[in-house]
Image (cartoon, rainbow, N blue to C red; front, side, top):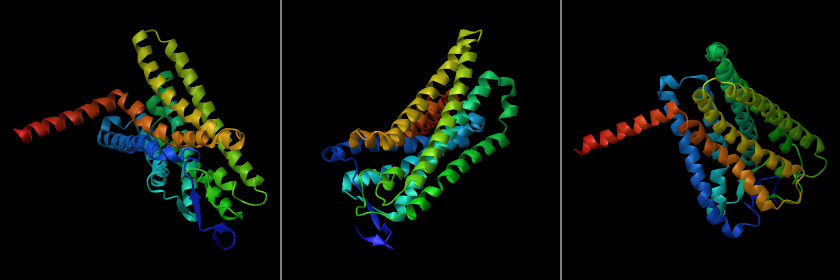
Length: 319
């Protein structure tokens, strides 16, 4: 291993998914397809919401923030994963590794925060509809988005500096597809308990707070929905909520599994842990534009309008 300043390696070696080396080329196909859906699906949602003034509402503005977060999050890991799987390009320079680490952790925190913001929007819209426009005005939406973004950036800003200040041991091989904080910390020498404790505390605090508040929001929402006098209104609200809850469950279940495995699941096979760690960063960005977008009536109508105009234009040009 070549060291820079006798402290850290010039490059890290990302192994991919240990134990599945022979099938990584085949695994790249579903990963690539999911990335394409996630990337272009979120781009489409952003384009539609920006172009349609009727969608400039708190829910869709929060969804736009979530879409931008998803694009950055999946793009920070999937291109490198595909390079490993297709071309065996396993090297990643030290600074790029730190950048990737920071993006992954900070934007994951942002995603969690935007889920909470969207849950709160649904809570106000269903439980207190008359005050929805007053509570969630444009300034409030902007301040919420800014707060979620700054929280993710500031809490995880120390991670790269922590790693850069540590001394690494004899290996620079990371048995993973991307630079995850705890995976990199395992390569360091000496006592890193304080650094690990900081990372653990921040992750638990943000995750637990967002999950608790999101759960409370949907609990109140469901209680209100089941108390509605008309069944049609109740079914409409419940349909929207179940879609949101499904995405949130996928996000938190995979993130909690990844988090717990890194710290306590030493007996779990690496291929299982790393596969789920990648799913955790890819499935929610892929599902969000499908569930939040396609299943939302206003967005669905806008997509159909665009497709209809394109088909009419093609017919006119053909005739």
